[in-house]
Length: 137
Picture (cartoon, rainbow, N blue to C red):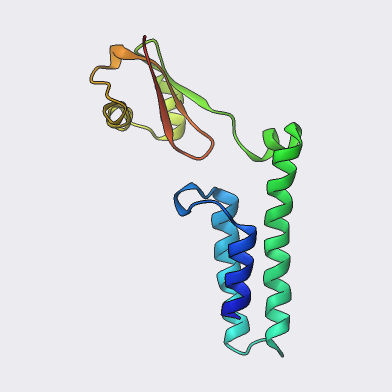
């Protein structure tokens, strides 16, 4: 079971660990549960567990492929970036919607070498949950 899971993860999920999306995280949890059942002898054979794991991996790959290939699926499955700051002004409604504090934005701004809110042209909450900062020129 371990070798089959390793092979599936190695050849299907080629992203870095820090770049996994919500669908990849969900797939990992589901695969862990399905594999646990296969290893705990709750299935009649290891093959039953591997078929379930293979099905989960297939659907994860299929959804990734559809979002890559078709804009409509991307809009449906991945949220658009949400503006949090425009020209140094915080958009409090959007920040409340995503539970982002001023400290969160300033922390990301400092990581980008920006010390003042007034030096931010725009800040966005990206679809993967990260905050991106665009400095003023």
